[in-house]
Image 1 (cartoon, protein in one colour):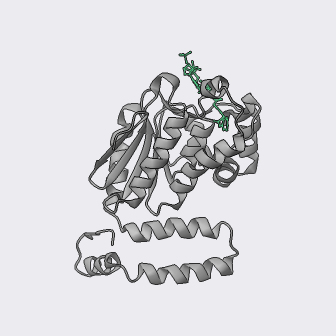
Image 2 (tube, helix red, strand yellow):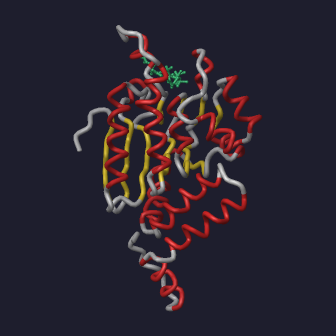
Image 3 (cartoon, helix red, strand yellow):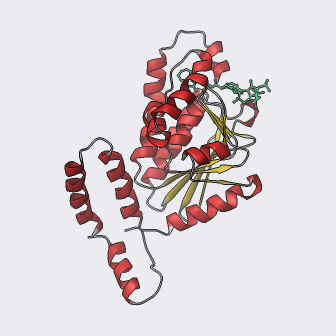
Length: 261
Ligand code: LHQ
């Protein structure tokens, strides 16, 4: 795929999307928004992709919306339309693609860049990473799903604090708050992420995707409804080849060879 503002790589079942505007800390201009949507669409549709990694080139994950582009526009734009046509599509794709999405947070994740990191299923952070809900600094409200994801990850008090102070949360604090799964030395980040992504890409992809779907659905359900939904989709998981392989490999005392089917 020919992209200019992102890099797209595929190897061993893992698609890696790298934000590639390092001079502006991987801030999102319209082209990078469109290319990210397109790359996620391809990774979602491609059956050989069983795990997606998102990261940034240079010293940032992403500084969010390109504020220079907003300032330089010669026409008034509706921020609502900008979100509906752009970031909302990125966030919904990340959540609705039934494959695990890992954010390899290599540096600062601010504004919409923070929202995108928060929408991933797993966040592995470099010790140099940080998280900033930068919106209030420019007189805006948290977007790109942050009003939904952030309180669920860290609780209302910490989420509200991050939103109104726009203070930088270090990787260590993010770990202690439950905002990230792990913090690793910067030089080891991509090796650690490769170990995670290889392992997930060799997993029972259908069951992993259904787990993601069920957990997101359960967020809006009562316990009885969630139990019903679990029963309904366990039927689907129970009819996969990977389920049969999982049981067989257990009985044969060997590791499973999941095909993601
Ligand atoms: C940037 C940016 C940037 C352009 C650094 N844009 N150039 C949705 C709906 C509609 C409209 C508005 O927005 C949204 C969603 C949002 O994302 S709103 C929030 C937008 N993001 C921010 O407000 C963050 C702005 N950036 C920062 O606060 C800092 O740059 C951080 C804290 C991320 C990093 O600070 P430093 O490490 O000190 O780096 P720096 O500030 O020196 O930036 C390095 C370069 O990157 C610099 O360019 P220059 O040519 O001077 O070297 C910055 O201008 C550029 N850059 N963020 N968002």
